[in-house]
Length: 347
Image (cartoon, rainbow, N blue to C red):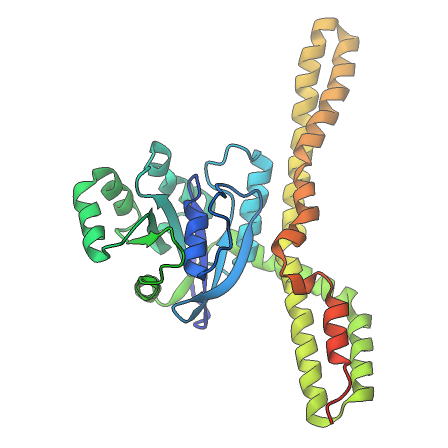
């Protein structure tokens, strides 16, 4: 059952969703005031989270593959949907659904139905339409004209509760940042000041916490050793500050790893692998039946191997995801942070 829960007031979690093309990535750049995605990026194969500020408010922006990305398998799509939810736990304060104002397609008109299917039947209450526009923006006047003159856009916007914001594809234009933040905050406040949650977001949170516990237990000896070394070098308030900073950084690293790889995601991968083996084996057997029973067995084995390989390609994404999603500081934690905390004490 979908729920609305009160969330953190210091950070807004924004799930940015795209139908097709570069709109959602241009929106992320606009929100973060930096080029997180190249202007040529029209799709991504893995989910990502970036931290920044919008008009002075701390935000976490989560991106996943476009809804209509045809280059992603069904198994990969399902895993990345789960991963995006893990990156956004306990749930997003807002879904920002991005479109190109000049290229509204029939697929775009069907996105509300897919949003409900993927995130929960009440998610549209937390959605806002973001239209990408080039050139100078006229603010409210342009939005009003869009609603009155373009019936395709008007129909699409109404499906998302009439909530609309037009943003400039040039991320250096900061003229409407405050207005966008106000619209998001107003929408959140109108829903009780909480964030969106559903059974799958709850499942994601449980899986991340379980993985965090496992990773923390695995590093117990390392943490204790680090604390012991600190106790030899520092005393009193300086020691407490060093321990707190070290513990916070270890916790952040563990949380980041748990969000991009946990039991729930591995279950999705295994399911994709198993489905690939079964489907491949069946198709191979059908082809082999032309050559008789022996051909069915041979081609069934070959088809199963090929299908399993295709179904398991998501593993490659997992192996490389940390390098693409994790902040650089996490790539060599010991050399960066341990040396920092064990530096020569200040006189």
